[in-house]
Length: 224
Image (cartoon, rainbow, N blue to C red; front, top):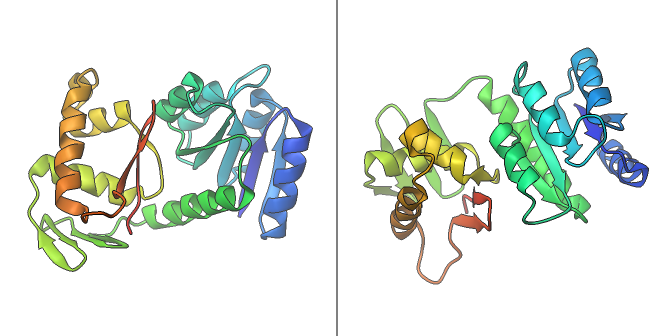
């Protein structure tokens, strides 16, 4: 698998190259967004890891440019939990983010998740199973820990979106647009209510919620 790493900090690119290559990935390096876009168009990597703050073309612009031509997974690197550019990148089509300074094992796990999802999306299945969850899309049936669960249509759509994107952060805007269409983007209270209803149905008492809040950003789903 080929990974394009984009960052103007040479220490970061050295660390990422060493870590990724030690796990069998072929790594290309770019120092800014323009160089990265040229490299992407020539080499067509399987995944992109990009910083947000860079000269010439930042990570948000790079994400938009890649999304015009490809659905290649993109993981963005951010220096702040509350970085508005991070949210903008996710809304522009990035798949996940990691906050600097980052844990190398966590980043590698995120890389594996995105590459596995890309392979699975090549042929979307009629049934989706992840951890505690099994969804029959055609029959509109859901089982959680082996027990069938009754969900409203919007709860079903939200859970299916989450299960298809386990471990991948979903911004508030992305979720509102997916469930209610463009007109729902400015109604965050709809999402809060729906999330609360779904949590009541799928979570176990005194156990961490499957739906984890990402402050200022959105939600991330875990299947176990």
